[in-house]
Image 1 (cartoon, rainbow, N blue to C red):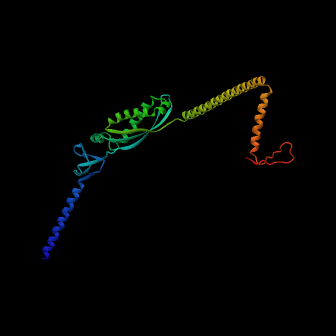
Image 2 (image 1 turned 60 degrees about the vertical axis):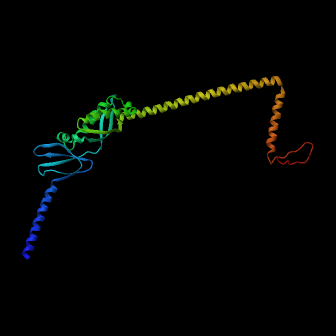
Length: 276
């Protein structure tokens, strides 16, 4: 009985060892492709296979085959470029690119460019295209026609990237500056324009004040002429009328004051007239 148990445990140990070995071999022949990734297979005998493996768990032959995983999602990249404009101004421009590889082109990309294809391709073609595009515009046009410049760079850069199996989902200019000398010249021009506008305003103001003085003088002259004419026609009667009107106005204003006391004619006592 003891011998039989010993044999049983021995067989179970051998079976467990065999299962572990088989499990290790199977596990070493599996690889995972995560979401948003793709894989190409390098074979030691046939080279890179012209097959793109999608997401999931897959088999390969250990030692003979090796999976190379690529990120197929859209990724951003900023590329700074220093170039010159049409009027020979130094331009510092940064382009933001959203790119991804064409899945069906991954075997060719790995064969010709390698796993770091974006570092080999994007800086060179971005510099090439931006220098060609910016050279067609002067510094002022680069500012006022920025959207047009971005669209032109987008079209040409997308065409160049397609030759290397890349798709550019979006291209935008995120940074645009000029040389120190040009920046100082722009600032001086703005100051000069502001001073010119201020001088123009002062001239216009002086002209308006001069015109107002002329109109006022003409009004005074016309008023004096009318008064002289009225005096000639009415004599002292007009002056007496104005005196009466002024007296009525003064009397009305004084009647509203509580501290005013009136002394009637032919009386020796003061009468306080209450306000109305």
